[in-house]
Amino acid sequence: MPDGLFPRERSEPAPGAVHVPGWLPFARQRELVAACREFGRGPVSYEHTVLPGGGVMSVRSLCLGRRWVPYRYLGPEENLLELPDWLVELGREALADAYGAHGPYGGFAPDTALVNFYADGARMGMHQDREERSPAPVVSLSLGDTCVFRLGNTDDRGRPWTDVELASGDLLVFGGPSRLAYHGVPKVYAGSAEPALGLAGRLNITLRETGL
Image (cartoon, rainbow, N blue to C red):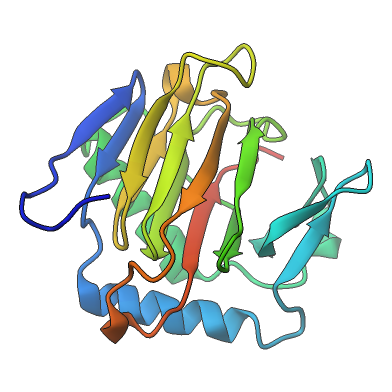
Protein backbone atom coordinates (compact mmCIF):
# COMPACT_ATOMS: atom_id res chain seq x y z
CA MET A 1 0.00 0.00 0.00
CA PRO A 2 1.19 3.60 -0.49
CA ASP A 3 3.62 4.88 2.13
CA GLY A 4 2.98 8.56 1.47
CA LEU A 5 6.52 9.28 0.22
CA PHE A 6 5.49 9.81 -3.39
CA PRO A 7 2.48 11.63 -4.81
CA ARG A 8 -0.14 9.45 -6.41
CA GLU A 9 -0.95 10.52 -9.93
CA ARG A 10 -4.17 10.58 -11.88
CA SER A 11 -4.45 7.49 -14.07
CA GLU A 12 -6.68 5.57 -16.49
CA PRO A 13 -6.48 1.95 -15.35
CA ALA A 14 -8.72 0.82 -18.24
CA PRO A 15 -10.49 2.44 -21.20
CA GLY A 16 -13.26 4.63 -19.81
CA ALA A 17 -12.01 4.34 -16.22
CA VAL A 18 -10.41 7.32 -14.47
CA HIS A 19 -8.77 7.33 -11.03
CA VAL A 20 -8.25 10.73 -9.38
CA PRO A 21 -6.32 10.35 -6.09
CA GLY A 22 -7.18 12.77 -3.29
CA TRP A 23 -10.10 14.33 -5.16
CA LEU A 24 -11.96 15.11 -1.95
CA PRO A 25 -10.25 17.57 0.43
CA PHE A 26 -9.90 16.26 3.97
CA ALA A 27 -12.54 18.62 5.37
CA ARG A 28 -14.99 17.39 2.72
CA GLN A 29 -14.18 13.80 3.63
CA ARG A 30 -15.09 14.49 7.25
CA GLU A 31 -18.38 16.04 6.14
CA LEU A 32 -19.21 12.97 4.06
CA VAL A 33 -18.38 10.60 6.92
CA ALA A 34 -20.75 12.59 9.16
CA ALA A 35 -23.44 12.51 6.46
CA CYS A 36 -23.09 8.73 6.05
CA ARG A 37 -23.53 8.30 9.80
CA GLU A 38 -26.66 10.43 9.64
CA PHE A 39 -28.06 8.39 6.72
CA GLY A 40 -27.85 5.26 8.89
CA ARG A 41 -29.83 6.72 11.79
CA GLY A 42 -33.16 6.01 10.18
CA PRO A 43 -35.65 5.11 9.00
CA VAL A 44 -33.27 2.34 7.84
CA SER A 45 -29.75 1.47 8.85
CA TYR A 46 -26.77 -0.26 7.24
CA GLU A 47 -27.58 -3.94 6.73
CA HIS A 48 -25.92 -7.05 5.33
CA THR A 49 -27.57 -7.82 1.99
CA VAL A 50 -28.91 -11.34 1.65
CA LEU A 51 -28.45 -12.74 -1.87
CA PRO A 52 -31.10 -14.88 -3.62
CA GLY A 53 -29.03 -18.04 -3.09
CA GLY A 54 -28.87 -17.44 0.65
CA GLY A 55 -25.38 -15.94 0.82
CA VAL A 56 -24.85 -12.84 2.95
CA MET A 57 -22.59 -10.00 1.86
CA SER A 58 -19.85 -9.05 4.33
CA VAL A 59 -20.29 -5.32 3.68
CA ARG A 60 -23.20 -3.41 5.18
CA SER A 61 -25.17 -1.20 2.82
CA LEU A 62 -27.98 1.28 2.40
CA CYS A 63 -29.52 2.98 -0.63
CA LEU A 64 -30.32 6.62 -1.16
CA GLY A 65 -32.95 7.38 -3.79
CA ARG A 66 -33.90 4.48 -6.03
CA ARG A 67 -33.59 1.36 -3.91
CA TRP A 68 -31.55 -1.61 -5.16
CA VAL A 69 -32.13 -5.19 -4.07
CA PRO A 70 -30.43 -8.19 -5.65
CA TYR A 71 -30.68 -7.95 -8.62
CA ARG A 72 -33.10 -5.17 -9.53
CA TYR A 73 -34.28 -1.70 -8.63
CA LEU A 74 -37.61 -1.22 -6.88
CA GLY A 75 -40.18 1.36 -7.90
CA PRO A 76 -39.93 4.93 -6.61
CA GLU A 77 -42.70 4.25 -4.10
CA GLU A 78 -40.26 1.85 -2.38
CA ASN A 79 -37.63 4.53 -1.76
CA LEU A 80 -36.79 4.70 1.94
CA LEU A 81 -34.16 7.43 1.98
CA GLU A 82 -33.96 10.55 -0.18
CA LEU A 83 -30.94 11.12 -2.40
CA PRO A 84 -29.90 14.64 -1.39
CA ASP A 85 -29.40 17.27 -4.08
CA TRP A 86 -25.95 18.14 -2.78
CA LEU A 87 -24.79 14.55 -3.35
CA VAL A 88 -26.20 14.57 -6.89
CA GLU A 89 -24.26 17.77 -7.56
CA LEU A 90 -21.09 16.25 -6.09
CA GLY A 91 -21.49 13.34 -8.52
CA ARG A 92 -21.81 15.73 -11.44
CA GLU A 93 -18.70 17.61 -10.35
CA ALA A 94 -16.81 14.33 -10.05
CA LEU A 95 -17.81 13.20 -13.52
CA ALA A 96 -16.89 16.55 -15.05
CA ASP A 97 -13.48 16.40 -13.38
CA ALA A 98 -12.87 12.84 -14.57
CA TYR A 99 -13.98 13.24 -18.20
CA GLY A 100 -13.74 16.99 -18.71
CA ALA A 101 -16.43 19.64 -18.50
CA HIS A 102 -17.45 18.96 -22.11
CA GLY A 103 -17.27 15.17 -21.86
CA PRO A 104 -19.88 12.74 -23.18
CA TYR A 105 -21.98 12.66 -20.01
CA GLY A 106 -22.76 16.31 -19.34
CA GLY A 107 -26.37 15.48 -18.50
CA PHE A 108 -25.46 13.01 -15.74
CA ALA A 109 -28.49 12.69 -13.45
CA PRO A 110 -27.86 10.07 -10.75
CA ASP A 111 -31.02 8.90 -9.04
CA THR A 112 -29.49 6.32 -6.70
CA ALA A 113 -26.50 6.07 -4.39
CA LEU A 114 -25.34 2.86 -2.79
CA VAL A 115 -23.33 3.40 0.39
CA ASN A 116 -21.23 0.41 1.45
CA PHE A 117 -19.46 0.11 4.80
CA TYR A 118 -16.49 -2.25 5.05
CA ALA A 119 -15.71 -3.24 8.62
CA ASP A 120 -12.54 -5.22 9.33
CA GLY A 121 -12.58 -8.36 7.19
CA ALA A 122 -15.29 -7.23 4.76
CA ARG A 123 -14.77 -7.79 1.04
CA MET A 124 -16.69 -7.44 -2.21
CA GLY A 125 -16.70 -10.24 -4.78
CA MET A 126 -16.34 -9.65 -8.50
CA HIS A 127 -19.62 -8.48 -10.04
CA GLN A 128 -21.11 -6.27 -12.73
CA ASP A 129 -23.30 -3.20 -12.19
CA ARG A 130 -25.80 -4.16 -14.88
CA GLU A 131 -29.26 -3.46 -13.44
CA GLU A 132 -29.21 0.10 -14.78
CA ARG A 133 -30.70 0.93 -18.18
CA SER A 134 -28.65 4.09 -18.55
CA PRO A 135 -25.14 3.77 -20.02
CA ALA A 136 -23.93 6.64 -17.80
CA PRO A 137 -20.77 5.92 -15.79
CA VAL A 138 -20.57 4.84 -12.17
CA VAL A 139 -19.06 7.48 -9.86
CA SER A 140 -17.29 6.02 -6.82
CA LEU A 141 -16.00 7.95 -3.79
CA SER A 142 -13.79 6.31 -1.14
CA LEU A 143 -13.54 7.25 2.53
CA GLY A 144 -11.50 5.73 5.34
CA ASP A 145 -9.27 2.69 4.99
CA THR A 146 -7.37 2.09 1.76
CA CYS A 147 -8.55 -0.84 -0.34
CA VAL A 148 -7.51 -2.82 -3.38
CA PHE A 149 -10.08 -2.25 -6.11
CA ARG A 150 -9.97 -4.92 -8.82
CA LEU A 151 -11.21 -3.80 -12.24
CA GLY A 152 -11.65 -6.76 -14.54
CA ASN A 153 -12.97 -7.48 -18.01
CA THR A 154 -16.54 -7.49 -19.34
CA ASP A 155 -16.70 -11.23 -20.11
CA ASP A 156 -16.22 -13.01 -16.79
CA ARG A 157 -14.75 -12.76 -13.27
CA GLY A 158 -11.31 -14.01 -14.29
CA ARG A 159 -8.26 -12.31 -15.70
CA PRO A 160 -7.29 -9.96 -17.16
CA TRP A 161 -7.82 -7.44 -14.43
CA THR A 162 -6.10 -4.36 -13.02
CA ASP A 163 -5.69 -3.67 -9.29
CA VAL A 164 -5.95 -0.06 -8.13
CA GLU A 165 -5.38 1.10 -4.56
CA LEU A 166 -8.12 3.50 -3.49
CA ALA A 167 -7.36 5.68 -0.49
CA SER A 168 -9.60 8.05 1.44
CA GLY A 169 -10.73 10.93 -0.75
CA ASP A 170 -10.09 9.12 -4.03
CA LEU A 171 -12.46 9.33 -6.97
CA LEU A 172 -12.94 6.48 -9.42
CA VAL A 173 -15.22 6.76 -12.44
CA PHE A 174 -15.83 3.89 -14.83
CA GLY A 175 -17.89 4.18 -17.97
CA GLY A 176 -17.68 3.60 -21.70
CA PRO A 177 -15.88 0.31 -22.44
CA SER A 178 -15.44 -0.31 -18.68
CA ARG A 179 -19.04 0.39 -17.66
CA LEU A 180 -19.95 -3.30 -17.48
CA ALA A 181 -16.57 -4.56 -16.34
CA TYR A 182 -16.55 -7.03 -13.47
CA HIS A 183 -15.08 -5.40 -10.37
CA GLY A 184 -14.64 -6.05 -6.68
CA VAL A 185 -12.69 -5.29 -3.51
CA PRO A 186 -10.53 -8.29 -2.51
CA LYS A 187 -8.66 -6.51 0.29
CA VAL A 188 -9.02 -3.61 2.71
CA TYR A 189 -6.03 -2.40 4.76
CA ALA A 190 -7.55 -2.18 8.23
CA GLY A 191 -6.41 0.81 10.26
CA SER A 192 -4.88 2.64 7.30
CA ALA A 193 -7.15 5.69 7.48
CA GLU A 194 -6.05 8.98 8.95
CA PRO A 195 -7.22 8.85 12.62
CA ALA A 196 -8.48 12.44 12.44
CA LEU A 197 -11.10 11.29 9.93
CA GLY A 198 -12.92 9.56 12.76
CA LEU A 199 -13.76 6.44 10.77
CA ALA A 200 -12.74 2.86 11.57
CA GLY A 201 -13.25 0.95 8.33
CA ARG A 202 -14.04 1.99 4.78
CA LEU A 203 -17.03 3.77 3.28
CA ASN A 204 -17.73 3.71 -0.44
CA ILE A 205 -20.38 5.85 -2.11
CA THR A 206 -21.36 4.93 -5.67
CA LEU A 207 -23.64 7.22 -7.62
CA ARG A 208 -25.53 5.82 -10.60
CA GLU A 209 -28.12 6.85 -13.15
CA THR A 210 -30.59 3.99 -13.42
CA GLY A 211 -32.44 5.20 -16.52
CA LEU A 212 -35.68 3.86 -15.07
